[in-house]
Every structure is written in C-alpha cells, then in structure tokens.
Image (cartoon, rainbow, N blue to C red; front, side, top):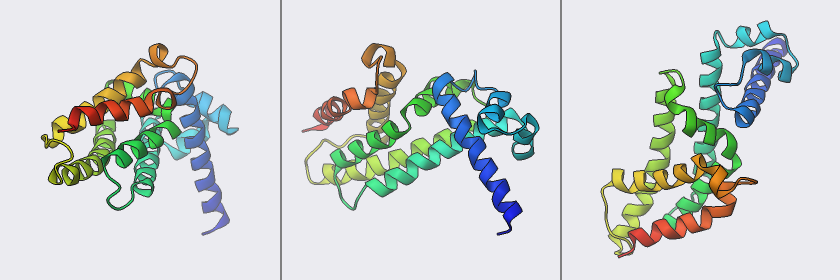
Length: 193
C-alpha cells in the first residue's frame, strides 16, 4: 500500500473515530461535519473528500459501530457457551460502545433511510447468536421454547428501554454496568420452565 493510500485511510479512520466520539457525546442530530473536521484536525473540505455527504458520514459511523459490536460478539461467544454467556457477551459489547449505541437506539428513526439496512444487520447478527443459544437450551429442556422473534424482541426491548432511559437508571454512569446482571437474570427467569 502506498504511503498516500495509507495516509488517506488513516484520515478516514480518524474522521470516523472523531465522529463516533462526538455522536456519543451529543447525538447524531447535533454532530456537524465542521465539528468532526475540527476534532480530527483536518479542513472541513477533507470530510467531504472521504464522505460525499453528512449522511454518508452518519452511515459510516453506524456501520463502524455495528461492525465493532458484531466482531466483538463473535469474539466473546464461544462454542456452546449457553444463553447466559451470549446475553452477558452482548451486554459487554454494548457497554464498550454504550453511549454511541444509545444514540443509535434513540435516533434510529431519524437517520437516513439507508441506515435501516445497517441497523437491521446489526440486530440480525445479535439475534442469530441469541436464538442459537436459546434453541440449544430449549432442546435440553432448560428454558421454554418461544418463537425466535418474541424471544429476541423481549430481550432487545428490555435492554433498549434501560439505555433510552439512562437518566432514570444510571444518570452518572453506565446503564449496562449498573443493571446488566439484573437484566440477564430477569430475562432468564422469564424463559425458565
């Protein structure tokens, strides 16, 4: 790879990294390209060299976070770790990106239409791990068998409710750190036979 190509890729990564940081602090709606450029210490025009529009930058941020979460989930979920292990791994992945993921949850319907594919892909990856672990435990009689969509939506709805209402559940810190174990225990209680 030429040094020019490497430099261009490093600038792109820096722009995405700074955009992720700013989104975590102030949300997608309030993150401006000029602020991303300033934080990355590049000219405002440089943002548009790498991303043809603000929407393209937003999609890159969402894609980056989605990829980080799915890669980390894949790394953390071992072979036949069980449903509890998958739930705990999911929460660890979210906690590592909690502030920006929370903004994704809150602002999902306000983001560009193309974002939907990224969001659905992220949720599908999480659902596949969760459902595979649940099916294995249901086949052993450890939990009741539920339709996959109901089981996944119950879990993700519970987690998203706590994240959206951070001001109520953990105003000074991480919602996942404060309530993650209780969420896992509660969800598993709902499924036990």
